[in-house]
Length: 220
Length: 140
Image 1: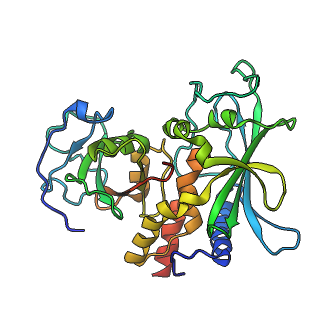
Image 2: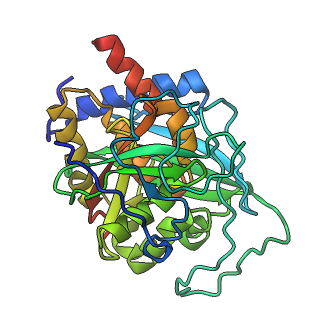
C-alpha cells in the first residue's frame, strides 16, 4: 500500500486491522470497536498496573524485556486542588485504557487514554504521569498542557485525556518519506504508536517491528 | 547516503551523556562478522573471557537531521535507547526542546528503556545493528 501524506480513514482502518492481527498473535490485547452505526470505529487496549510502579503486563509473549522502571520522583506539576496523593504504602491496581481514533480534521490517528482505580475513581493526569518513562517526564513538565488535553471521546462521549495530534504529521513525515524512498511499506499505526505510546506509559513490544519486516519480506 | 572514512577518535567520558562504553569503530575493524565473534573495537577495555559486551551500531540520519561525523559506534549491550538518544543529542548539540527519535527497521521506535543488546539480537545483521535517528520538535 502506497504511503503518502494523505492518511484517510480507510487507510487508518486498514493499518489498525493489520496491527490488531499481530496483537492477536502475541496476545497484546488490542481490539477493534465499532461505533453504534458502524460508520467508524477505534482500536483499544486495556491493561492493569500496580501503582507501586511495577508493570503487570497483559498475558502474552514478546521479544524483549518490557518493564516499566520504577518512578519515585514527584512531578513538579502544580495541583489546583487538594487531591490526596497515593503513597506507595498500599499497592493498588490501576486500569489503563488506550484508544486510537481517527481525526478527520488532522487526518492522523489520535491517542485517547484514561486511567482509573478498580472502584472506578479516575486518576488525575499527574498520577498517570507517574507511570511515564523518566525520559519523557521532563518534556511533559515543560509544556504538558499544550500537548495533553482532556476531551470527550467522540464515540463513547466520556472524558479522556488526549495526546494532541497537531504535531503528528511533523514527526511522521520523515518516517513516511524515508519508507517511500527505500520503497518499503510500513504500518503507519505501528510506527506512530511506537513513538507516542511511551509518552503516556504505553510501550509496544518489539515483535511489532519484527512483524513489519516479515510482511515486507513476504511482499518481496 | 555515502559512508565517509571514519577517523578513530577516543571520546572523553565527559563528552558523553553518561556514555561510558561508547567508542567509535574504525572502518577497518567493522568487517562483517557473526555476532558471536570476539572482535572488539580498538582501544576498549573489555574484560577478557566475557562474552562480547559491546555491539556495533551504525547510526544513520533520517530527513533533515544532521549527519553525525562518526557513524559507527561500539556500544555496550545494556545501553538503553534513551541513553543512546541522550548521547546523540549531545553529540549533535541539540537544544532541549528538540526531540530525537531512534528507529529500527527505519520504521519502529523502540521503547526508551529497551536495551541495544536485545535490538541487536533481533535486528542485527552482518555483525552490526543499523539504527536510524530523526530530529523533531514534536512536543516543543
